[in-house]
Length: 113
Length: 113
Image (cartoon, rainbow over all chains, first blue to last red; front, side):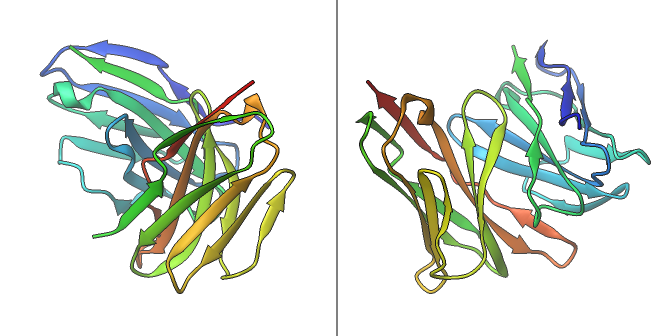
């Protein structure tokens, strides 16, 4: 079974731009969660999608948004990028929610200049 | 606000040593606590703990949860260089719309020869 895939793996953007990251969950998994990881803050929860609906949301500004498609693939978008958005963005999938074992993708490393 | 504190933040040991990693938490509507190992990119699942006092074991790793005192420990015996990683704990809470994980900042373990 293929694992969670994320694209792109690396990205460099400048302040003010916007970015879209993609996550394809393990086949059959319907829950996708997104996390931001920085050295200072650790892994922080962004949001979770299940069956195309956002079920949970972390404490991030509205510049961070996401969506999920009918095939469970998910995208997250960050608008008006700031330097502090530089981080590793991880997505994780599970069958029905984080209460089950989540499988993480390799992440997208975003650098904002 | 939910809080997760892991200690120590980092430690360096020699192969063969035994280490104990700590995780204390304050989370409303607690459901379970998960441990992950993160080497280069994607965290990989180690344990899910739901009941107090029941030790879970996997090879040289073991973990236990104390729901009364709100902490968990992860033990690694006979450490090897391959155990070098960041170890993350994540209590899971029920939010009404699903479940959510809150990650600690992790313990960075380095095992030297």
